[in-house]
Length: 193
Image 1 (tube, rainbow, N blue to C red):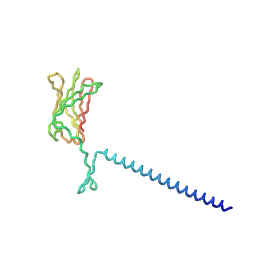
Image 2 (cartoon, rainbow, N blue to C red):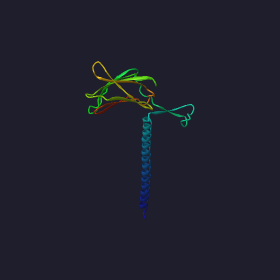
Image 3 (tube, one colour):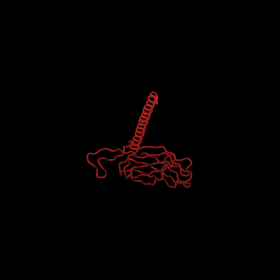
Image 4 (tube, one colour):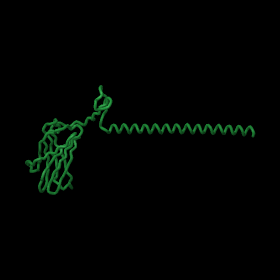
């Protein structure tokens, strides 16, 4: 074999070795980039998941016996409710077989726990309204209250009632109004929290 052939083979071997090293390094870099992107995406999804849980972890000076370590879970504060008497507009589904539910008022919307709250709502039916009830859903309870019919000066059917809220309503505060007539039931939900 000639010296030129031997040099050519050595150059080819060196070039092949360099090419293999180059491909290995490129593959390694690509793998690292893909891993970092995956890890970044996973971290973003974890943060999004934590944010959607509606709880905040805060550190305390002393561990609570009910929670491990120094972490306490506290609900994220909700939007502040208006204070005092509110009026609202509502409308039951036009295709609902029951009485038509309209607007009303709640006084006060923000009663202290155990204090009285009054509720009025307009309900109409060409035949007869059999009963109207309000289900108040709070943080840990659901209470059902029966309303009584009254008439106002314009001859609209007004149903009203009074009760005490026996729970807090920091995280859940929903009024479900059910109106019953000879042809069926109508329902609306009014969600404050």
